Image (tube, rainbow, N blue to C red; front, side):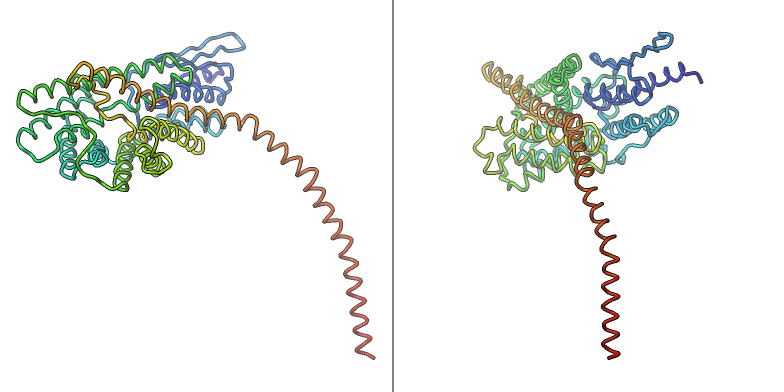
Length: 466
């Protein structure tokens, strides 16, 4: 195969890798960096990779005959799957380090896209409902409230999966899920079931909040990927409106049936702090399973989520006196910083840690459902609270992530070469001369010691003879 054909294959493979990473939940600037690493790994350092809105572009100009190869593909299906994302990131690392060739890389990408899912089918089916169960406990709901939330989640999941497999956009999946959930809660309360209907509704709706889109959009916006960030944040607004409109419509219907429900995150059960933290950790674990987080990183994600609950809920004296938004900001920065640090250690995208772990920080659904307010003044107050809380979460996670990523890059570029130079100098001018001196001392002392030993032995022999 000619060199020009290999260059075109490298461009196509780079494009496919970028599309997969973006569609599976990586941040835009991470994808651009990964694609450039792939191009350099294949010997195309002058080629360029750019993400604009939801479009991935790769262009290469051959230095010999100025032949240009440009490939463009739109990303229309944004379905986070962190198992595929992790495997794709590992393939990028292998290409960058020269540990795989073009043929092997193409075959490996095909294997990743057709491989089995990280978790069994039953767990992926039940994970959203189990997430809602744990969230209801975290909001101080009773076991009966949590069990009802679990049953509602399992009941609507088959229809949600059918819609997901269809050609309908994610918008309609959210509209159906919220409408069906709210309708079931209204009917259960109307039937006289002894549950806290408002809290059951809250726990059931949290799974639909666009947390992943919020983190990714704000991260891209702060990192300078403005088009991608604006598109993601526009999706947050669209999905938030879908949630608000659907829930408002069904709850208005419930009022006609004499069922009064309001979104609340304050249940009647005073659970101990350890139960609240454990419930938040369990919710993060099932949220991670829903996103396909690899099993080997699941524990670190859960611990990160538990730390976020401890800080956000003010369960430590150090943060107890801070306002709720201040605690949320600190918890978000912690998630962004530690998540990026772990991602750097594991050589994986930071979203694998940051996206699942923010679940306990998501604002109470009332702040994202201002249409449910009873008065215009309350509606405007909720809108301001929603924007403020969403901004705090997004900026906190993005800032922590970017600060740590910048430090890691600076360390690799400046600090590590200085440390290596100092280490080499110490080895050359201190350690090695000392070692040579020790060897010379041993060479000069060993014969003398043998001579002294011989004379001592002769004296002893003469003494015994005398």
